[in-house]
Image (cartoon, rainbow over all chains, first blue to last red; front, side, top):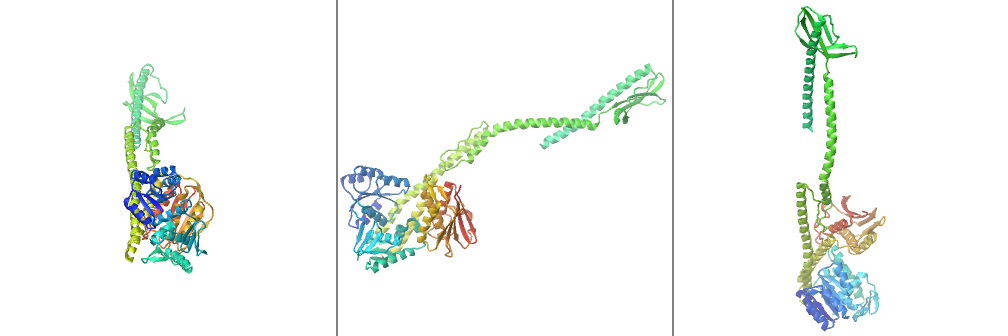
Length: 224
Length: 401
C-alpha cells in the first residue's frame, strides 16, 4: 500500500511513517500544504493521512481538491481539535475517518486498515491471518474455517491484534482502543489481562498460538 | 424626625405660653377700660348697680386699690362654673367710695392648648401628605435609572458577549457610578475571555506534543531492543500521557460548554442514556450497577452532553464506591439519584462540584468529572446536588426545570 502522510510536525510525521512502513508499505511524507498538494497531483495513493492544520494551509482545502479530482484514495484526518464541527466538516467533505491528536500509532494503523477494508480500496470483508479468518461484516472469527465463539470485546481485541501484528502493544493502548474514554475507570489493567487470557485460551485450544507476552506486561501478536 | 418632634413640642409650648400671655393682657386691658367706663357712668348715675355678674358697683366705706384675680363663678346661663378674670377696686365718686368689680370670662388653658394642638396636627398632616407624594414622585423619577441599572447588573453575565450597558442619569454621582461600572465589567469581560481562550489554546496546543511523545514511545517499543524494566517505564509514561490526554479533553469540553457550542436540543431520553452508560461501564466495573426506573425523563438536550453527564455520574460512583456494594441508579420524580456506598462523609461536601476538588488519592481521577456534570446542569438549568445519608453518597440531578 502507498501512504501519504501530510503532517507539519516533523517528529510525528517520521514516527507515523516508520510505524506504518513496517508492514512493507510505502510511506511518503509532506511537511506543508504545497508539498502535499504537489504530491497529491503527481502520484496516486491508497491512503492519505491529512493534518487539518498544515502550516501553510488547511488540510480541509486539500481534501476538497482531492475530492474534486475524484481521486480514489482513503483519507484519514488527524487534528488537534476534537470539535464536532471540524469532524463533521471533514467527514462531509468525504474523509473516511477522523482521529484526534494525541493518538496511538496502533490506533491509527487499525483505523487505516478499517478504511482499506471498506470495499472500494481493494479490501474485502475477510481478514485472513494464517489459519485465522475474521468476517468483518458478521463480526465472527474462524480458525481453520471452524467458527469460534468470541465475545464482542474478544473479537475487537483479536482484530486489533491482527491489524497490529508483530508490534508490541501495552495494556494502556489496548484498554484505550477497547474502551476509549471509559478506560480511566480501570484501577489497573488486570481487567485486560482477563480478556486477553480468555481470547488466548480460545485460540490456543484450536492450535493458534499467536498471542505472546512481550517484556512481561505487553503483548505481541506474532506468527513465529 | 426626632428633631422635628422636639422643635414642634418646643414651638407648641412657646406658642401656648405666648398666646396665653397675650390673651391675658388683652383681657386685663379690656377690664381696665371697662372699669373706667363704669366709673364714668357712676358719675352720672350714682345708683347704678351694673350687670351682675359681669359688672357690679356697690357703695363701700373702705378704700381698696385695684386687684386682679382669677375667680370661678357659676354662670346660670350656661349652667356651668366658668373661670373669670376679675378686676376690683374702689373709686371715690362724688365723695362716695364705690367698689367696682368687672369680670371677663377667660378662655381656658386647655382650650388654647387644644386649639394649638389641633391646628398643629392639621398642618403637620397636610404637610406630611403633601411632602410624601411630592417626594415619592420625585424619588421615583430620580431613582428610576438606578433601579433599571440594578436589574441590568443582576442579569449581567460574564459569559455572554454582551457588554453591560447602563441607563444614563442626570445625577452626577449616578453618572459616574455607571461609567465606572461599565469600565469595570468591560475589563473583567475581556480578562475572562482571554483566560478562557488561553485555557482552550493551551489545551489544543498540547495535543501535538503529546501526539509526538506517544508516537515516539511506540516507535521505541517496537524498533529498539529494550529490556523489561525499560518497557515498564515506557508503559507507565504512556499511561501518564493518557491521563494528560483525558484531562485535556475534559478541559476542552468544559470550554466548549462555556462557549455555548452545544446547540442540539433533540428530545433525549435520560432513561435510555443511563441504560446504555451502565451497560458500557458494567463491562469494566467489578461491582454491580443496578438501575431502578420509577418513571421516564425526557429532556430537550444535546445527546452527546447527556451521555457525558450520565457517564461522569456513574463512573464517579463506581470509582469511589466502597465495600463492593452495588452502585444504585434511581430514576424517579424527574430526578436521577446515583448512589454508592462510602465509609465516611466528605470533608467539604459543598465543593464536590468544583474543578480539581479531590478527596480520594486515586491517581486516575482528573478531578473534572463532577465539575463537567455541574457545567452541563447549569447549561440546561438542571439542579445537581450531593448528600451523604446512611453511609451512602447520593448525587442527585433534578431534570424538570
